[in-house]
Image (cartoon, rainbow, N blue to C red):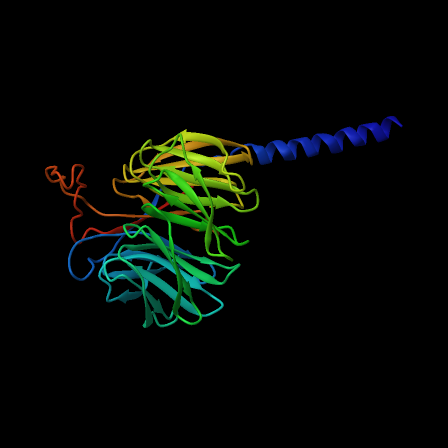
Length: 349
């Protein structure tokens, strides 16, 4: 009997240690491991936006003004360029169809391309300021979120046609799909998260993001139904229940947030900001997150993707000139980018 009790105690102790290991945030110590300079985009200027990581193909898509640069995720070599845009933003891939889609806000279009050749194969008319884009595997539809137009364009990617435009009543920002028929989108004007039913193409709920404000960046832990919404004013990250909108936890962040990424394999949550900070958190449990570290990157490095294989963080930025004088139309003007200085930054442990 005593031997059995000893064995039982040993087993329990190992189980407890395992739970503690899962609950403890791993050591991070992220630092710059590679800086890749990239040529200027045609037409001048260095506007840049979303980064899309294609893990199966080991490719990285960098939105860069009038073009999209495509890099090998391991060698960091440029393997292709998709060009001819006015001001591109988001890139997604629909692997089942062998198609890619790129939003162009100034052209008010979504362009379709072949991921094998990087050639444009079609286009879909959208709305002014067509910006972020997401694919919903439940409905097999694409949704673009059109900032100043305050709506979402719903597209059938197989047919390349518009299904519907959804009025979202306020300036929209980055979305995330849960894979089960819901899309959640930040509304920076209304300071809330909009929950969209992708079957009925209607708004199911709206949830305030306080204590954050002007929500921009979004990610999700799909397994545990947690949303991560980051705002620019107040500058906060909030963790929210995806089923009822309850804010579970919040953290202060630096200025100019633009991207959140959650890694389900490690429970790590990454938040990047224009100020040049990479905030890293760990999911100790679905209801408790802890700060791991804040890494100083470079000013402007607000757009981000994470390599699920290496756990390296990819950021883009450029050099910036001084901000112009404020005007009535632009009371808080941003510092302009300097042409020819666009670059990719890779941070790792």
